[in-house]
Image 1: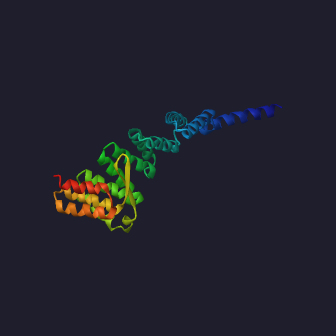
Image 2 (image 1 turned 135 degrees about the vertical axis):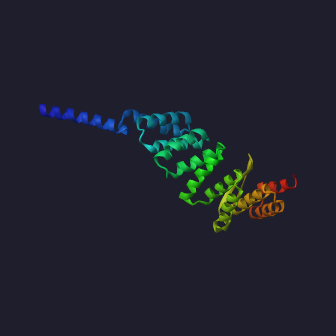
Image 3 (image 1 turned 120 degrees about the vertical axis):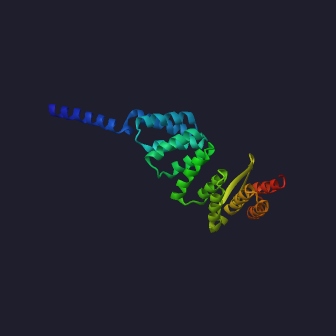
Length: 229
């Protein structure tokens, strides 16, 4: 009898030690996880975020919780916190492509273009994606690194997939246009030519962009702007 009682006590102690070593088994963790999932289901961002923070405090070694948090911030266009969370994720895993892309987009939306460019370049080394290279080319243009931007643009134009890959532009808040990567890159090269003072080359490139992405409102606006100056 004494032996059985001792065995029962040891079992309870072992279960308690397991719960302490495995936060996911605790009642508090399970409760907060249930709250998070329910809040997420009902798009209650504030409650979901608070529950996630409690889960992270309970299990700070679970990087997947940070992944959920950064996506939550990013989905609701909270660029400053999404940037900060992405930085923490990348410290633990520099090859986390989702975090790296959110990092790049967040820097871009915060108008920290030099840092955004660095992040997009790091991302491109890992994903070799056309759209990532286009973002690199456009950021190089924004930073007035025109020679680099033209080099990136030319690489894109040589890729046959540029005729099929689509990019969405928003001429205003109520409309959107889908154009080929080729049209977008020709428009970008037109902007570079304009900034370099080569008006006729810019006109030629904007016309080519319109032909490749008809109607392509942005390219038409850029073409019209040549005659406004």
